Length: 251
Image (cartoon, rainbow, N blue to C red; front, side, top):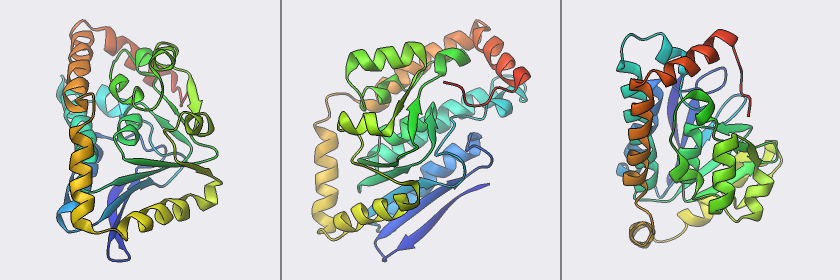
């Protein structure tokens, strides 16, 4: 179980997340992503590609870790870890390309939506089942992928939306067969990496500067409601049920 980085063409940092069986990340995994992305840019990469091994791109936070930890330590860790990972991707000084396969739910949506470019396999989908887990969050990020009313429908119902549907909304650049996903992501990364790195970094900062929503502040606001639900005991009820019934990804 790890977050690792491979340098391709001396200019592209490929960050790979591998937490079997479903990439439900523990606290350390979220901070691992943040550290890998920050380090890649600091080491001079012109583009970062974020990808994952296994059945799907990301299954959100490791709820079992949270329920098996006394007090609020794991909850606070997960919230801070997600915040750090999302922030690192969004504020990365160079473009970030997410290569998404299979499921991408909960916290995974925060990573993908804060990326600059999304390439997906034809089996990929996203969903935000937070309400069913007694939590809130990543509405900020879901709103970057789909129009407002669709975002609310997906958020309240927990329904999934496929990569093909996201492509029609313009938030996914390309949908390819799964065995071509890494190649497609690298092709886009190489196209970007061929540009002047000084201009790339200036362009990334400029585009972030004109974003209509401060994603870091907006997500932090959402997290406050998650803390309230936890203090009220609501979240524990839903997480205990999730662990007890052994529910897999169900959206």
